[in-house]
Amino acid sequence: MTKMPDMLYRTLSKIGLRVSILGYGASPLGDEFSAADPAESKRAVHYAIDRGINYFDVSPYYGRTLAEARLGEALTGYRQQVILATKAGRYDKSREVGFDFSAQRIARSVEESLARLRTDYIDVFQVHDIEYGRKEQILGETLPAMFKLKKSGKVRFVGITGYPLTMLRDVAEAADVDTILSYCRYNLMDRSMDEILTPLVKEKGIGLINASPLHMRLLSNKGAPDWHPAPKRVVEVGRLVAEFCRSQEVDISDLAMQFVLQHEDVTTTLVGMSKVSHVERNIQAVGVVPDPELLAQVRAMIEPVANVCWKEGRPENDDPGAVEKQS
Ligand code: NAD
Image (tube, rainbow, N blue to C red; front, side, top):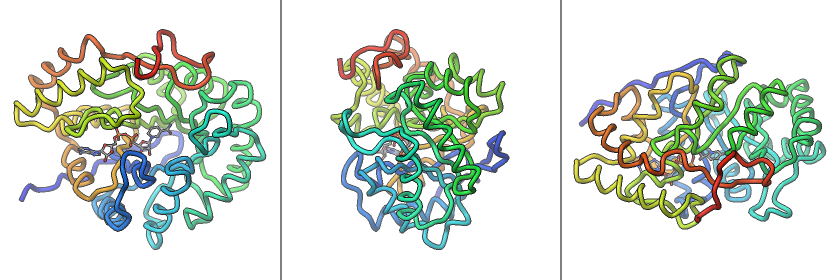
């Protein structure tokens, strides 16, 4: 049997928390990718904790509260061992009624999340997908409401999450956030996070959380789910890269995980997991340097579609050059 590597930890600078470099993304617990087996999900959470993963990320949006409820149940008796991050502001799929960044909703949201997660404090409370809000409201109303909760002790740290890097950067320049969660912007398909966000994060000592290292399953043998927003040509290159890796007897997901986990400025990388086998597999990538030759070959295949980003949120918040989803 292969020996499991030891977990590695980094300090979330501003916060001073010791965080496992591999973090647990709980969106699959809300059946976001496919129906998860609740018993297996619970085993996966416990296995992750046993193996040293101590950062858990969820949101009321995942499975429209299902992921929080399942995670809360699984964490019963383990709460003190983990750093628990959840979010507020995004609740449903509909653009019209799915978002509420008002101060009143934030105050109500934290109470609902505390109940579902069966705890009396949240470690990292984040505004979920700020690009769906107006920048003025996020800065003038939403974040002040979050900071008030921090003062009250219900939440320990305040963060923002989202896809367009320029908006994350602009908001973090103007407000004193503790963490930024960026997704799909630092992995084998897209590395623009380093151009736009990483310098600011280093300068201000903000905790950088990198999510979706598998580009939301595009970098896997199973391939992207139907709802994946990437343009078709990006999905196709992902498929070809996975096929090429298979021909080299390598699982593309292993290479993708090894690659992202090397980033020294990222405090934790969140991968979505609801199966023990995925937790086990992803831990195997910790501290493993990817094969440089294979990496170079894969990067050359990806080059024509590297850093292609799509439109997400309000048009005024899009990154320059963003293309239509699934175009
Ligand atoms: P991901 O890139 O981590 O892909 C997850 C998918 O890959 C799941 O279907 C999972 O079953 C599968 N998988 C995991 N390990 C695998 C392996 N070793 N081999 C093959 N398949 C594997 O995408 P994600 O789940 O969207 O992102 C990770 C987490 O980051 C989320 O669960 C969520 O907690 C967080 N996140 C937050 C935001 C936000 O706040 N806006 C956005 C995206 C993700």
